[in-house]
Image 1: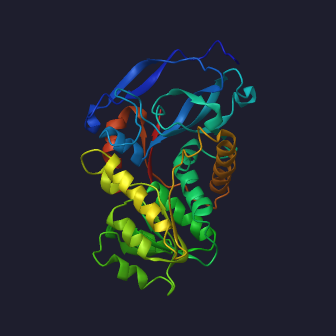
Image 2: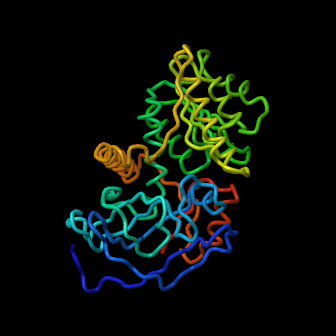
Length: 350
């Protein structure tokens, strides 16, 4: 292991102790800092953030979340301080962006080197953070799952969110026309970006979308709601179109076990894919292949996230940071993120 005698021994860490409101999160100011094992890196965190995943975890409604208590945080950006055996020692002193799923809400983190990508020089940590998990998710859904082409028209739900906002930018960069489903309070800003806004709660949403869609239907729909919204999304596709489902907020926001609605959703996707209409549906999972096809997963992550970060550095994509908070103000930050009033991502700075 590459070592440094000045490595920290304690750090600040946020702990989610159980099913609590945002003000029930615990700020541990003297959490121990571990030593990176084989294939791991010790990172001084410069920016992390709040995504929908952590909001669901707070309510105990995220698939495969660890048992309480634990430290949330789906991704981070920071400087490598030390590398464990087998990890690239050349990363020490470099800034990396890392997918963590949990554990990023801290001042120093032990992360997997295989889930870390070097951040291009000239890109600020908070901007890199705003496009790490959100950016690679949007890019892979658009270009690997849906495989959109210039001239296509797509529908994006959650258009004002961290993933949706980046997906819109990426689609426009590729010459794709966008219809954006969001709350009416976001419509003015969406129009200013050159997209057609629609109200996601419109009871006649399908007819509203069809008025702006090609006669043959949409090339792709990106749905994070599930339930009836997924059925509407499927009906709006044209021949050869793709429904990319990447969350089931309708179920996560409810009560009871998540498994029945999730299995019903997957069953519906399988049923749709068996129909001879030229359309297809898929459930996008950022972690698919992480444990079973490690080399190909790592290759895609490096290629896709590096490209997204370079697009932000070069000014092609805008990293939309809705607000910045010190890590120790996590309760206020989470309350704001959960208010659903923001356009972009809340970034935490240790």
